[in-house]
Amino acid sequence: MLSARETLAFAHQLADSARSAILPYFRNAAQVENKSQTALFNPVTQADKAAETSMRALIARHRPDDAIIGEEFEDAAGTSGWTWVLDPIDGTSAFMAGTTTWGVLIGALHEGKPAIGIMDQPFTGERWASDATLAHWSRDGAPALALSTRTGVGLNDAMLATTDPYLFNAPERAIFERLQSASRLTRFGLDCTAYALLAQGHIDVVLESGLKIMDIAALIPIIEAAGGVVTDWEGNPNPLGGSVLAAGSPALHAEALALIRP
Amino acid sequence: MLSARETLAFAHQLADSARSAILPYFRNAAQVENKSQTALFNPVTQADKAAETSMRALIARHRPDDAIIGEEFEDAAGTSGWTWVLDPIDGTSAFMAGTTTWGVLIGALHEGKPAIGIMDQPFTGERWASDATLAHWSRDGAPALALSTRTGVGLNDAMLATTDPYLFNAPERAIFERLQSASRLTRFGLDCTAYALLAQGHIDVVLESGLKIMDIAALIPIIEAAGGVVTDWEGNPNPLGGSVLAAGSPALHAEALALIRP
Image (cartoon, rainbow over all chains, first blue to last red; front, side, top):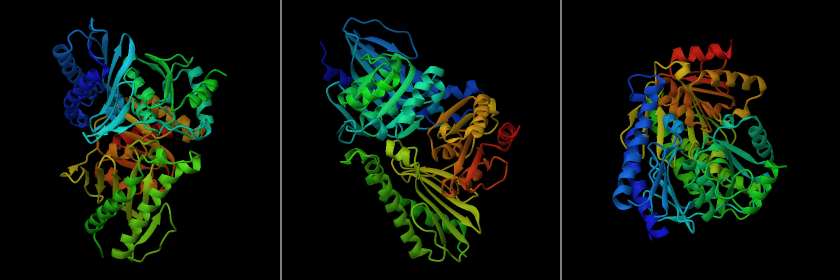
């Protein structure tokens, strides 16, 4: 059976190939002749498909027995116990807006449990990666730094993040606003980068809802190996989609969860 | 009298010096021993002061007759007709959260009118610059690319941005939500980067209120030289603080303004 270490090494190859596939499309929307909404979506759709095609080709060649769940194409069954969860561009509207908060998410579940995760940001050259035991950040191939969350921070000193408060329905938004009132500062618009910066010790709490499995699977090992906690809004671990609460420490997670379910 | 071209060349030196002063502090908050809110603010405050000190020293040495309006220290009077408007870190909470949407804003007014602007992002190495005639983007000293806004986009196809919808008061927020409903997509959390990406043709409309002169002075020449329009919410040009509406074209600006003042 292939180890987590071997699987992470292979995941880095996938991230390299996705990075090369995506970069030519980034910030090229302005060159699109027809400015209709469909045309403006084209570069990100093309980049998404090019990256997923490239990653699936590598998996087919080197890990043919692994299953695949991807954003752009049909799921593929496997027999190895490993399932790849691929989101070539998490944050398509960020990509379209030219910001660098989007990322390539490459997760692998082992027997259904998040075991490997990479988030890559092709433009800044940053990469967050974990084999569920350790988590590291690196940039453009420079030596990797170990990630650890910020600890010893109460909610009243916390940096809270969510991508878009208008994505919450009314009861969810009331919960978010309770958490916001109790926190020190709130940041918006970060997509997957919010979770990566939580693992890196700069953001303390992330609250989101309506996630798909590919939005979060890769991030769970990174957050947990850095010392953070990620659950659904009921406190259940390994939230593979839906409502997610991530926090930098068990104590802070408990404090936030108590506000979610008063 | 010093020309706009000479003044922009000098502004690039200021940006280089601010970049060097700030980078050592970025993403170092996690190393702060005491996790209280005051301690967490320390790195950004230190970076802010170090950058402004360094820029003021260069101005004192090379342009002693220019006036200075800065975020961190007292205003200085001048006799040359040029006034520097310095915001060493626009987006302090973004800086604290470890995101790269903050920037160094260096503007110069000539006889009170925005004439020169630079926005620098030290971590990504990106720089947007204008002498009010042309606007350019460059990265890490690579050849500069001319900036131009996206044109031919109606509000229904537009990418709208604002940093934090909770910063609006109730009537302002109603206006924002009208614009949001009429737009194709909305992005949050971008600070000065929203205006830079508007000049670059990726974002179409930015709506904000409560700005200070140093939040916007440097961005006006960049937006205008790229083909955009920036006014207050009444449609008056050169909004040196307060409520700001920026759009990628005169037609789109008019369409947005009509929604602000129905």
